[in-house]
Image (cartoon, rainbow, N blue to C red; front, top):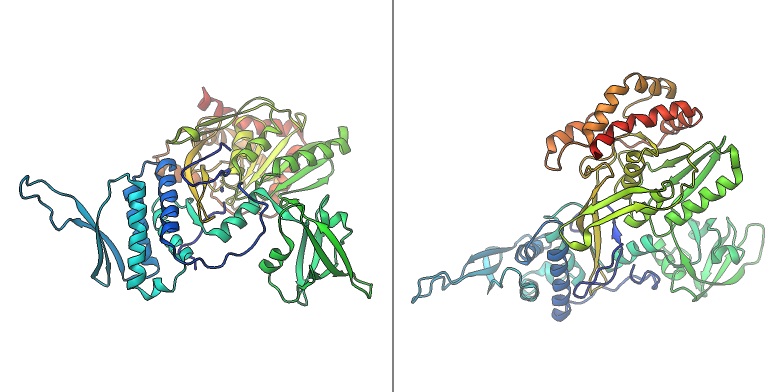
Length: 543
């Protein structure tokens, strides 16, 4: 049961808070190699519930980007129970003995739970920042609500956690969210990899048919091939199983074995091979090379993205030598991922200077990232493609390479997710993705709610690349002024920021126009240099 939509799948420095575990910083890795299983619905256990609520309340109050009291958090969480049963309401009222006879001073307030207007339970409100007090009260009210509500009686513990934490987080910002144990394990696998064998498949007549074999994985080493049809795993039939059930069978801790039986096209007898699971990262970088131009499509940022991109870029450079003309970094549709991976990707194309900074309320959220690597493109032209779905980590890379005069950015205004989320792991193995800092581009502007402004805007365009670039060059003073204006408004100037975004409306772009413009620039170094010089005005924002 989902009580509200999850906006972005989204989530560095180490965290240790209450019962929270160590996790990476997201712009979206504790034990990612555990067996990928689906939890059975947990029964409501008051002691465990109090631990989970205390961990969540404490983490949010300490780490959230804006100050928020435990009292505010808990009251919103309790009101979240109404998502399960709308008849449940929670209010603050003066205590029944509001005045002490001898002093005539206010004695305090109570928290009251009602079902269809009838009072179910009333308790004195704990002090505003009493984590354990509010956690205990939340548990006590949850127990009382279960006794009064048939809907809650039929709800498992996880549904209650989701209702409470969604009640809290939906009032903070759209990027802060709660994930239950199963979803959290899946998120960790996407970020940090998992124990598996390295295959992709699709269903064919109720059985998984392999569509690709990832290189340097157990599947490749065992000789599995595209087109093979898996029939059994450890002797158990895979017939008509769903993807989640098949994942449970194939994934597991690294170094453990799984026996696969498969049918190969053209052969009459099945084969069985034993594979030792290894650490598998979802593929996020794909490469194409055409006419000396290397195009690297980055779909998201996980723990392997920078390494993979570096390997592909090094290989391309060795293969092409002096025939390599430039690099296109395609970040269209990229929703983001891990902060440090985006920093490493930018560092692959820079040699020195600022990449990104983060600012937040908590001391651990303040960071300054500087380039210190070597430009793997050896100074050749670089073009970055973005669109309305390019967010967070993708925007970090685009902003860094644009502000540092290393790349020409082409596309539409990006999504505008200039915030960083930290992941708080809870005792129930769920996690809270919590906004805790804002991103600051090298030129000093915060692009949260604004996005990255491409040097060459393609919003709504269908013209030929030559005509688009020619028009940009003819209006270069207007473009320069716009790029400078983009970096001026404060975070609070929402009207101004919205008006700026209207100059290059955010759109989803996945066709070839941006690639054609990129190729047009890269094959004409003088023209690329003129386009790159359009961002020179942004230097004024740095000085």
